[in-house]
Length: 188
Image (cartoon, rainbow, N blue to C red; front, side):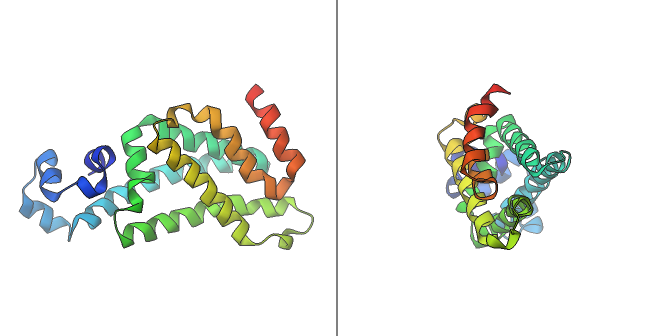
C-alpha cells in the first residue's frame, strides 16, 4: 500500500495491485481489510506512530520551547527525507484516502498543534492567544511540508525549516524574535 499509493497516488491504487505487490490473494486481503481505506489506515497508523515517536521524542529533550520546536522540526524533516515515497503516502495521499483517513490526519494534527500551543507558556498572559492560533500555525506548517513533498523539494528541508520555525514562533515570541530566526538559524 505504501509503495503504490506513495508512488502513484491513492486514487490510482487498486486492491488487485496491492495484492499483486504483496503477493497475497484477494481473499487474504478481504479477510484482513474491509476495504482499501482500511488497508491504507493500517499503514498510515504505523507510519504516524513512528513519525510521532521520533518528533515527540526530539521535542521533549530540549529545555526551552523554542529549542523544542527546532528539535521537532529537524526530526520531522529528517523522517520525511528518509523515504520520499513514504512521506508522500503519509502527508499527501491521506487527503484523498477517504473520510476516516482525514479524521486520522486531523487527530495527528491536533497532537502537533499541542506542541505549538505550548508556546503560550512563553507569554506573560498565555490566555491572550487562543488554541486556534496553534491549529492555524500547525496547518500552515503542514501545508508547506505537503507542498514540498509534492514538488519534490523535501530533500532540501534544511533550506526551509527556518521558515517553518519562523511561522511557529511568531505568535508566541513576537516579530523581532521570529525575524531573528531568519538571520541566526542558518548560521547554526
